[in-house]
Image (tube, rainbow, N blue to C red; front, side):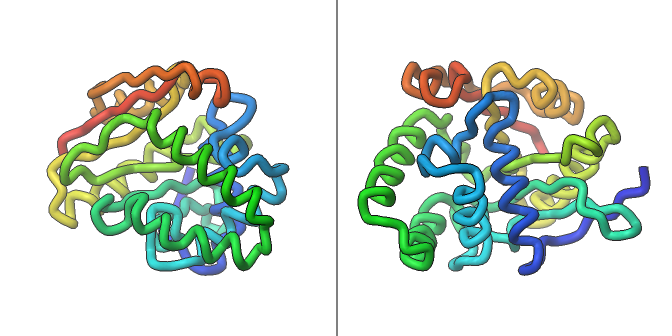
Length: 215
């Protein structure tokens, strides 16, 4: 399939919000963002759309993403790639309060979401020093099986290498076998497995795998 890969733009925010939500669900019924925010799907999408537009640039900002599209400009998939020292969770935490304020979410909702986010964060594998992180890999269901995610991955890894990174890291849910197969196909290997009862009870997966690849 003829697919063009381009950088994310301001007007991609709604597509990216849906893609990030989709990536957070992976093979489980209720995704990580729905668990953290405790909101219905459309409100989660609205939150993520605003996150994608709110600076400073962070891992979920539109500028951290690549978009796959057809020749007639139909968007088919996306993923994020970032340097965690510059665009990691610390940068994200600076953007989140502005989104809560813009959406006029009650303080009780934002406080509970922050508490759940902190608990989920404790379940994540450790960051690898100086690794280029790949995140939120998603392809629309009707375009799966056409190597779109693989093409996106090759592009984002080339960008990480261009920026001077020697390693790439990607985290995924334990049990997501199609994702594991894809990552291993392009050279990732399992670095760490982290299981957590809270994570399993709330997300539906026993925990997370961290994979690494030399660039």
